[in-house]
Amino acid sequence: MRRHHEVPTHLNVEDKVLFGLTVRQFLYMLVGSSVAYTVWEQSVSLGDLVRVALSGFCVGVTLAFALLRPAGRPLEEWLAAALVYAAAPRRSTWQPREPEPTDWQPAAGGWQELTPSLSWAEDDHEWP
View (cartoon, helix red, strand yellow):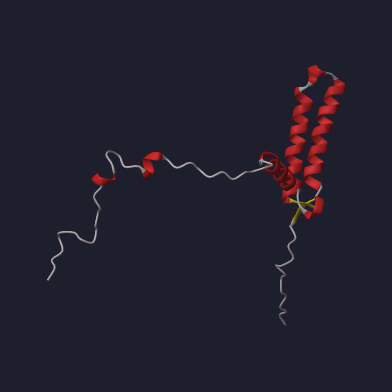
């Protein structure tokens, strides 16, 4: 006997890929650990204390971006919102725009020299 099982698609849950991490979290961990290792390897001349501090900072930022979700949102969304807020002006004032004089003044002469344009009274129409 065949049984029918319905797969729920409305759960709004990300799939777990490896070690209980989602794809996004795993990629953040992968890239962040690569950056921390590169910083460790490339900062030999700075001394051990600076190397440990820089690499530890990279690991901390990696863990924060991969695992923290304040208010149910990923940290990169909060960072994007903060950048948009920082770039937005704090005040805006409305000022009417000055009209261009060339838009409303005739090119040459006065109003007496203006001729109306009647598009409906073209000569190509035959009137009975």
